[in-house]
Image (tube, rainbow, N blue to C red; front, side, top):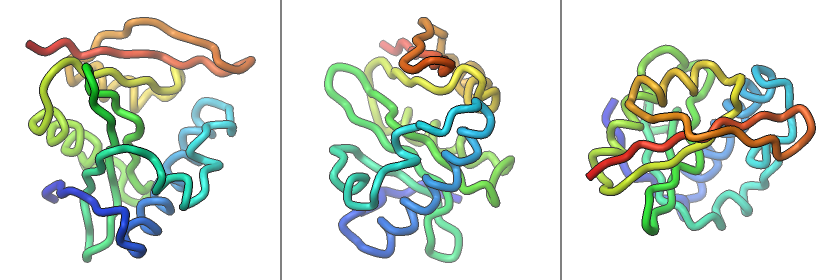
Length: 149
């Protein structure tokens, strides 16, 4: 699948992206034992209001995976989600590579420290763990940075 820009002003695209995010974050919540992940409780309107760029992979015209980011001085990956029905097909890697091809500068990202698939993905891509934070009791978040240029 070839990643493409996603237009969240399109109602069908936005609804599909929102649904994928909810399903994906539910799996992460189970992995890390914390269901307070903010996007898991985000409304469709709240998601659409985010000032992010979106890339996604589609199957039969419907988004099944996406990556979203903001860029100022660094690229800040806000979310990377794959519909659980599409796990283990390389979509997260494909989207991460597409993001790296389309952007310049350092890249930062954070994920649940116990989210082994995400941690492995970022480490394989050359990201270095820069620390960990505990924003809520029992929730450990690992932070990563990829230095470029």
